[in-house]
Length: 100
Image 1 (cartoon, rainbow, N blue to C red):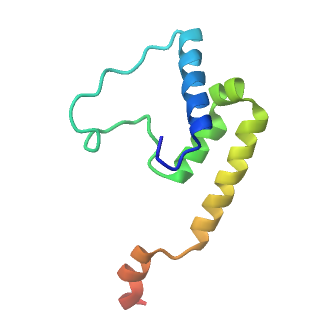
Image 2 (tube, rainbow, N blue to C red; image 1 turned 180 degrees about the horizontal axis):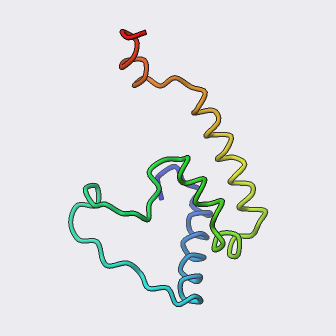
Image 3 (tube, rainbow, N blue to C red; image 1 turned 135 degrees about the vertical axis):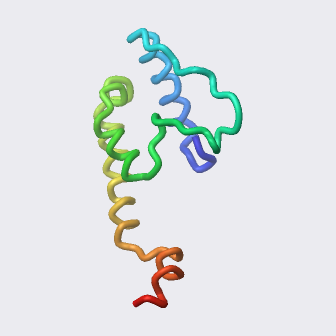
């Protein structure tokens, strides 16, 4: 997790994911060797939009963390997505200012 993650939630989710994998006899992916920043991982969402969508679909999250926890974080994440979608980023201003 990132440095801004809630450590209690991060630890709980990590333990829950491990237990879910053991209980469901999931095979872990191959060990990553090399530069993680250059590696292509289809399992990691690339945006908050994608992350919210993945959490909404996650049976494992609901089964291990409970509906109340998942719904709470989905509510917060969707509010964050709405706020982000309404904002004009520095990149957009710099890229499009001259064109508008």
